[in-house]
Every structure is written in structure tokens, then in C-alpha cells.
Image: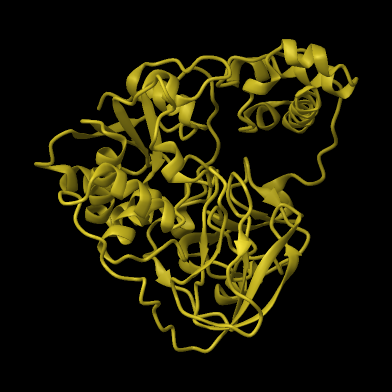
Length: 442
């Protein structure tokens, strides 16, 4: 098998065995959900309901007139119990709508089939995706409708679908590819029409041979869609690395896939698009991997948006031992939590409860030994040691000269560093300072 890849990157333990063979299971209906009005890239939504209102599953409860946003919908039917600021996974307090479930799961009349890919226009599909609140389900949560319309003077020629799932522990996308291949392909066809492209590639790492086979069977006889086997290497799923591996195109510094004629979406996003067209169901649930050595029964759960991560852990049997860290997302790019009372959002791909041995919590940072390993593994061909040194010294102008903003924060440098330097954290600080200074100049 001819496997495609990219320069740099690193090999991390997969740690996917606990959930890779477990079918997706429907999570219990929560007694209440806390749905943030800002769980996407772009402008936050304003509430469209008030306390005391009765809402139905799929009913739009928040939206914004902003150009870049994503509406939110009720994931359970019941009464709006509160609207206010609640803790979200990133540690922020976010304006949210709390709904007490009535257990009925009555559907909104707005949840109805929208038409077929063949009958709908490109504009129709983009509008349906927008109204369904669909965002990138790989973790970035960028509004999908916005990605499908290129800026003036540019156009797409290729759709790339990300089935890599390169983060350790996470197997949600793997299971979706095995259990919903036809829906994924239907969503790909819709995305192709929306982006006005005639070809699509589905990139899947070769540690998922069953998923490669399932999607290949599903695309058999479908013109314009090809499955590409990728070498298993982290961060193969990053969009710049994915485009390079599949198409050989180099996205320029500071650029986006559209700059090389490509639009990138996730396999879970494609399945969500199929739901929006076939059933009219907006994005009110997603698959979440709950795993780690501290979880009694690791599983892949289909979860209602707004369910607390504590409830998911309880549903998986609770903790077998006290975790050193609970992380939302994967261990490389995820965010450690200080509370289990935070909700699942559209971008929550996993909930990991990891032991000290898994997160190496007792390691102490030591001085840089100039080994160059961080340079070797950087998929963006940056110099992480120099950028981090400038950031730690507060010399952010120099960090910018080293192209700090091109860092994708994959964590490969911190993972490989023998001195356990907090490289990606320092680079993240540099990026935030550089962007803050740019905003002040505007």
C-alpha cells in the first residue's frame, strides 16, 4: 500500500485499543443540559428564548446576525430553566441556556427532510448547513457553511475529508466511518455540490484498515470520490499536513487551504450534513470518546450537546482511581479541566481521565540542551526552541519574525523534548501577544 505523509511529525502511542472495537452507544438522556451560546469560531449567539419557555428538540434557541457564527439548538425537549453565564471547557464563563428535560424528546416542526443533493442548489445546501448550526467536528468548531464559500477572487477545485483521527485514545471518527459510511458519502456529495468541486479525497490513517475498507466500499461507483491511505503519524489530521500529504500542495505561511483551492472537512461533519439534509436534524448531538486508564468502562457515546462531562464519566462506570488529569479532546491538543461540571459542546471529541503515568505529571522542566529534536518533528518547519525562548523573555517581535503565528499548536515539540520544556505553551503565549498587538494597531 502506497502511504502518503508529510515532513516532520512524531509517532505517539495510539492508546485506542480500549474503544476502537466498541460500537457507538446512545448516552442516557440527561435531566438537564447547559448549552453555551458560543461554542464555535466566530460571534456568539443571542438567546431566542426566555426563561420559562417550553422548547422542542431541534428548535433554534440562539443565533446571531454576524457573518461568521453558528446557531445553536435545543438538544432535549423541556423548559428553559435559566439563561446566564456558566463554565465552559476552556475555563471561560459563557452565556448559556439551561434546559430541564421533560423526557419526551418531542421534535420541533422545523425538523423535517430538506431535499436531496440532486434537487438542491449549492446555495440551498450552504443555507441548510448554516441553519443546522454545523461546525467542524474535529475540534476546531469552525462554521462549515462559511468554509464552503470562497472569498472573492478565489475558488475551490478539491474537497478533502479528514478521517485521520491522529490524536491518541480518540476513536469517535473511526466508529462513525465503520457504522455510518453511506451517510458520510452522502454528506461528502452534498459538500462537493456546496463547494462546487468535482472531486473529493478521504484521508484515513493506515492504523484503521477496517475504516479504509468501509469507506472504499461506500464510494465504489460514486464518481469523483477517492479514499487515500495515509501513514500513521501525528499530526496527520492537521489540515495543512493533510493537504500536503494528499495533494502535495503547500499552504503558504499565514494562508488557508482556500489559497491552494482546497476546502477541508471532517468525516463527522459530513455525517452531520447528511442528517441535516435527510432528516432536517440540526447539530444537537455528537459522538464522544470517553477513555483513559482511570475510566472503568471506556466507550464511544452519542451525546446530547450540553450534557456535563461528569455524567459521561458516570455512565462509563466512574473512575477506577483518581485521575491526574481530566482532558477534553485528545492528550496532545486537549484542554485539562478543573471541574467535571462543564458541558459537551459541538467541538468535544473526547473526555479522557488519565493517570500520572499517562500524563507524566511529575516531570520537571529542565534547561534546553539544543538537541534539535523539536525542529525535526515540527510539521510546520519552525524553530520551536527559538520561538519559545523569545516568548519567555517577552521578546514577542522576535518571536513573530520566527513565524510564531504559523504554529498549529500540535504539541509535537513539547512531546519529544527530552528536557520537558513547555514549548507549545510558550509559543501559544507568543501568538496571543502578537495577535493582541495587531488588534491594537487596527
